[in-house]
Amino acid sequence: MSTSIQNGEKLKKLLAEASSRPNQHYSDFESLAFPKERDACGVGFVADVEGRKSHQILADAITALKNLEHRGAVSADGLTGDGAGVLTQMPHKFFRKELAKEGVELEQDTDFAVGVFLIEDIDASAQILQIIIETLESAFDILMWRETPTDTSVLGKIARRRLPLMKQVFVKRPPNLDDDAFERLLYLKRKRIENKLYEANLGRFYITSLS
Image 1 (cartoon, rainbow, N blue to C red):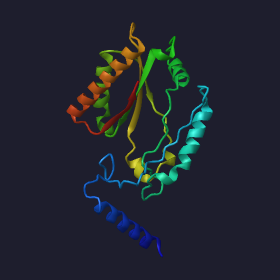
Image 2 (cartoon, rainbow, N blue to C red):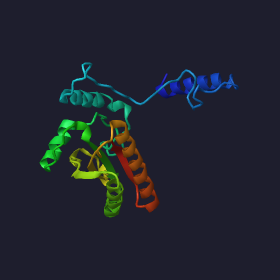
Image 3 (cartoon, one colour):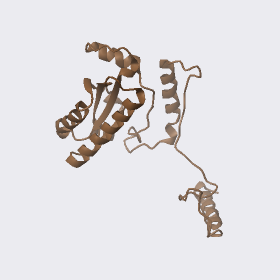
Image 4 (cartoon, helix red, strand yellow):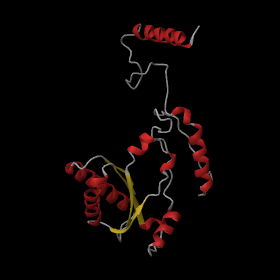
């Protein structure tokens, strides 16, 4: 029996089971999933049980991501994926080295925060960045802006056509703010930036993080 026929028979069976229970939800979450069918995107988790930071954790995470390639969608060019990536803790040591290149020295890792902004319309980037700067400067000292290094040679043609401008901004923690108060203020400023940019209607953008 061919695979398509087998799948068709399975679907008929599942539909028959569902129709025989008209008062039962398809799942506890009221989704379109059938009661016994469970699926999810591929996720990998890599950590050091002793809490030690190392580049090896990132290397292992990238290996795990490669091994999940079969769970992601790939476009017609064979190279453009569906946006899979790696989420890490903030690399304080690396960022402090970048700040030191600009003559910025800080006492503690928690003395600064980093914002990551993705901007689709390059022509509107000056206006967008001006709104971001004005909003941030109402609460923080901006330590520096950083152009995020990228390697576009590994991207497919479709991804390169839609590649956004990526900017990082480093802000200094105001004096007399504890960790929680600093994070709350960062969150409020992020929402204020989002609202202002939506109102300005300057094209698509995304704030990956501000913390």
